[in-house]
Image 1 (cartoon, rainbow over the protein chains, first blue to last red):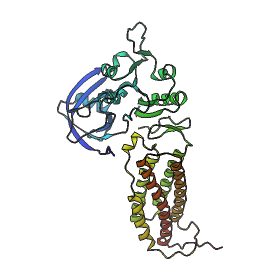
Image 2: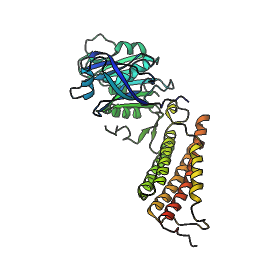
Image 3: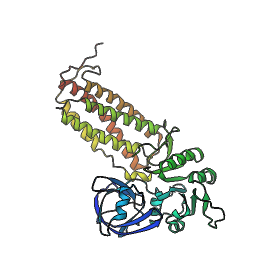
Image 4: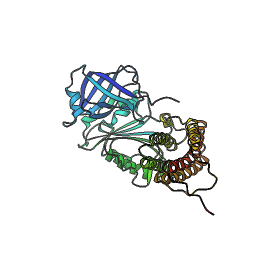
Length: 226
Length: 190
């Protein structure tokens, strides 16, 4: 049996940082010796004053750096800290944590994300997972982070836009509405493996639809703190 | 951090292996009873006097084993997510046999049936024993219903042995609690 329960406290230095979209930052830490993870797992960052914040790795499992993408909030203590930190500044984290990993091709996979909830799916695709339908829900199209990576990795990529008018746009992968709207009106009936990652309200609403329309499907959930 | 998702509001829940099942399904009944058992053992621990530290630690070790077992009960045998579970071997049942023998050796020989009760901690131990038997019955039913993979069958067999031994252990714990609490077991008078 594969041992995936090894966890520990690690320290790593900041190597790079870049903006992916307005309010969404990607940063990379030097990967500490002995730190291994399964795509989809996360770490819990620990700030000096005991404040903790969890983020999913989006990098390849064998990369030299660990990459993360985060929504920067004005009141977010960790996101402000990482934004202001000098390159080479050290950060502590516990991990790897979590069980939100790809379960294998038992049923057609449907990945559903809102905002930076797309992070574990980026990790899935970078580890070679293929053939899924991905729904990425965002307010505006400029927040469709990692779109090229995801489009290359999935069988179907659908950007679900709720905050702007998509009439007249030439993109063929747009759906005007919420990810739950797509599940309710577009996805063909069947048995799927659903992977949901994002805010609790989306997960609650999507689960209700899945129970109603896609009986026999499996469901894997990673809920973000609201 | 919020602890609720609202995904179980309509009578279904997710197994650790992802399946959506009714909250009254055999698997949920089984690990629900296991959860109840763990809670009653927590009540035994809470009712023990301060000088019963070794017994408290022993019971908390049992609680940890029950959490390990519960994770297996919440997972469809052979599912990919099993790789996250801690292996459940024969060791916990073997450890129980050792502590049963040791504790029983300190007690007066029992020649009659006794009535469940006595000291509060003993009463909780009897309650835990009966919940343990119910949990075992549910787990047996679950094993009968499923065509499990070989490795999963071995694990379930280990859990069944553990539960069987655990109810014996809880019986001895009940007698021990009465003994150290100065209570005499009440004999069944026919």
